[in-house]
Image (tube, rainbow, N blue to C red; front, side):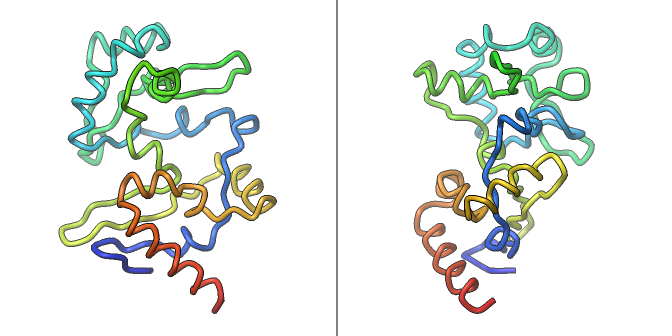
Length: 191
């Protein structure tokens, strides 16, 4: 583990290679799993505000679910997460003509229909953050659906922390990221 400020960063984040390969995985991270995307408290208002901009991009089943129970719920661990449709799709998913699962929020952002990019947990994926009383644990959530991203990252020589640079800066700030980058470079010299 590496400590930066009040975070403990898993060495996997420095050592692992990663680059999303959407044509291969088809956006499985928005579909697979036992719960929706973790949400931060301040994101609930953002998601409520963005809902009209994404509504027409959502699957009819997602629209029905949101109308009945809302776009967020509490999971088995007591965390607030996006609701999921039929035990799989995040309510904010949409599919492109190639059958790739996309984020309707990110789509609306890229088309200038909203200023909210998407929940930070989605932007950071496959990094997950666990909050403890005095620190935050920053870990790589490694599982089979991202194997093709590991292969592409190895081929392209892209470290996980470099691939997620924008997301990490969004979450922790540029100074934090610069310290992580410096530590990663030193760590890799002495491996």
